[in-house]
Image (cartoon, rainbow, N blue to C red):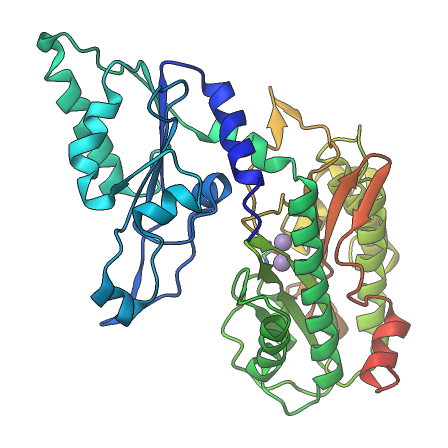
Length: 437
Ligand code: GLY
Ligand code: MN
Ligand code: MN
């Protein structure tokens, strides 16, 4: 693993929080699935971004200008017996020698050591609300220091969320991060192609999911970035459908929203196509609108444009498209103002993406939409959804749910579609499904 970037990140963060501060960053907890079985472990993104440390039961503490070391890692000690059962641990030595900590202590000693580290620091950078048990411990440690003020120590009197600085750092991706995201997107695109080739009426949705996950893993992505959505027919109109338990029927569409996580970075791709490999006229009519809206939105991704420009472009195309098909009636400008499209397009056009699929970073700065800058990565994912039985909607549109989603990097002179290898043109999709590719 390339650990070069982590010390630079810690240094930058410490430069921002300044002397007199202490930052406490716990990793995520292990969660029980049932009885002796755990959910597969994923470190907390903020913690991992700063440490590269993959084990559970760890807390990073950053203390700028501390003479005995600025970066302290609390983690599990090595333990021969436990390692035979559950695998290797870095231990205190590995924490320092391999992961670059200046000092390491057993995680069991956190309650004894942290109050001492807090002494004589004015500000605590800590993000409340992720783990209420840990929140209470932090408050308890501050109280312990306060109880000692008569002995001459100063207690911290300011709590600041770490998110402000840290999440702004995470919003701008480095070359190494972009490389990982490109790979995550490439793996996912390859998986989408495999699903397209495999899709047949009579299969089950979860069998398409299996094709996707197979391709993720074979290519080195050990897990999806989020539970894959494979929704056919009426399920294509359920935005976050994950049951994936229905049969794929001839004549229906299938909407797949699936992305791999690679080296800690997410991808998030949606493609929609007919189960039988050929778009019907109504399916094609709606598909063309969503595809045009997506294209127009992607065009807006460039430095100097603001966060909402792609959404506004998508909404214009979608509204006009729905008017042309007679689904909306009225003047485009009025309908956009009234958000008439939101009955059929009820989500926004994208979100930041990075270590987390819905990644961190502010969308507005001082009340204004944020300007796009090189290194930011976002999804562009317009959709249209017409569930069965929708009032006032001609039957030919029923059960058409379409979303087309790509991951787009803002570059110096425009954008790069990281997920461009996932086919989305109608001819391309139909050729792949016919076995021509
Ligand atoms: N896969 C969730 C989303 O598209 O935001
Ligand atoms: Mn998605
Ligand atoms: Mn998304």
